[in-house]
Image (tube, rainbow, N blue to C red):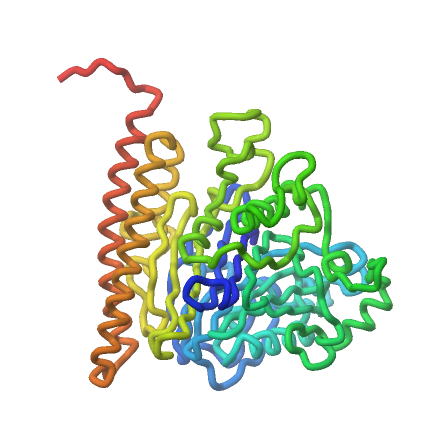
Length: 495
């Protein structure tokens, strides 16, 4: 999937939380309805069969409950996408990334081969369809998530290139696959953030640490041999650069991928570098934009949402701009694109009890026009407004309501922009206010709360009632604005 991911270490966030956030985007010309779900242990099979690659995998006997953002339509597999388990560990899967011919020649992707005549089918490897489902229910830390998925990749291989985030209260890890069976993972420094835009991203990588203490780096067991046998180390100074070795720098990267990293880092580090003009330190098409950066100020939830909704505001590349050279307005692929399926932002708050520590912020549809809503992750069921998505278009579904709002607001952008911004601000403010109040209420009566998931679920339902009312209101407003700019309008009125 074409997506954008943002990761924030605990000392780079405003409240000491770790953040992981990910847009899932559909491919060009089609849109994938998603729903917010809770997967119970009884619904987790012990033998899992992939849809795309026809591979059977034996799963452990002790799965945990977890949240997920699966496909709302059946037939393509689960695509759990992102979630949090009972151990307060989160996972995103996946950011589709790039590679190069040298890597893929040395370790080809493991693709499904259908049966032909008397030849039996050959199962493929694992991929985005499967990764959350076969990993998240069984891990108790971010580091353990890297280790489990790494072992699965080495055993079964993969048919695609992917980047995956793991998060707990202390650490955020980013894993990137390399060819069919190899991988590396790097811990996000506590005082840094990362933006990943559909491209192999990790640059500096300490192989000695990965094959030693593994404090900040991990990798597949034979990675050193793989690098040497395939002549992948391109460094001139002896400092291994994983992006040069395993990644790409194609013309498509320069229009589709790297500009997104440029836009986000330009916002969080405006004074650290020069970003604009022919002599800029970093330009939108540069291959050496750093993988991680220390921001110039601590990062908030609303800023992550803004970053993942970015459309190159205040630059000549903004498709909605009314200034500059019109030919440059769609030069680069925006982050807040029309085919965003959803975004989740998992916030793990170290200053609260474990049972209410995790908030999973959720928005659906195009990020430029949707609103981010906070939900407790320690729940038995998801709110119906977010869980009831099907292929049927209806305003009874949060996903479909937001899809409709985006299409209407885009068509009447000039007049709808301020309305949408007020909606987004109101939902985020009221949602945060309700979560903070619920935190305080829980701490007051903690000993009397017998069923914490039930308490969290009740809070989530109250938040859902608020966001549904707000969503219905903005839908009515943008419908009026879009109707006002229809081409068959006329200024004279008759009664």
